[in-house]
Length: 231
Image 1 (tube, one colour):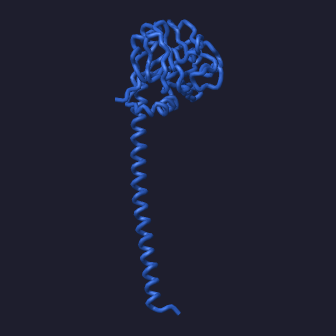
Image 2 (cartoon, rainbow, N blue to C red):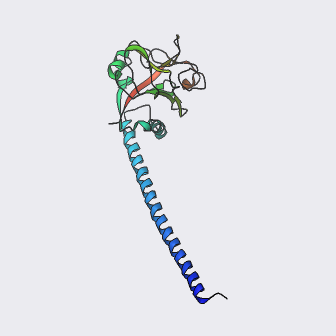
Image 3 (cartoon, rainbow, N blue to C red):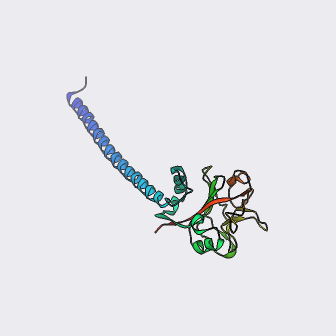
């Protein structure tokens, strides 16, 4: 038989273990509740920020769905945007390339959004922005996107992202010694054909003319340029 004193010690140990287990459970629950509250606050703040940022696109006639906004906002979140400001819109500023350069040259972190007459929506982003220098520029933050496909085409690091020329509008990527561009917007582009290219070395694209649904040429219906602000 077990001595009475030993039995008492055993019971005390069991009671203490139960108390410790209960205290541990309460502490874990408090910690868990605290973490959940922090996560909820973060999620609420993110939703408020996204709602605020979506309002910045209210001047866009191209981005009309929440999926369109969320698609771009998710990609651009790494730049910690506080607002998006429209700096050029073809239906307001015209399709004369001088107006594009007047409004956009020297602006950094800009999104070019294009809608074709057939309703396709795509564009590109560059953190260095355009100018009238006549030079190709590298930008490892640049990317192209298709809103219809909900796809991003990141730049392949080390390659030229954009081509700047006062005679043309926004141009993304240029094959060496050729006129093959991922996106090429000419002067008076509402009346002149714009073009996309086959799979190029600049951006991670898998199909020929993927942005324009397999077609090289397109007519622009609307083009909008937004600047990403993070002040």
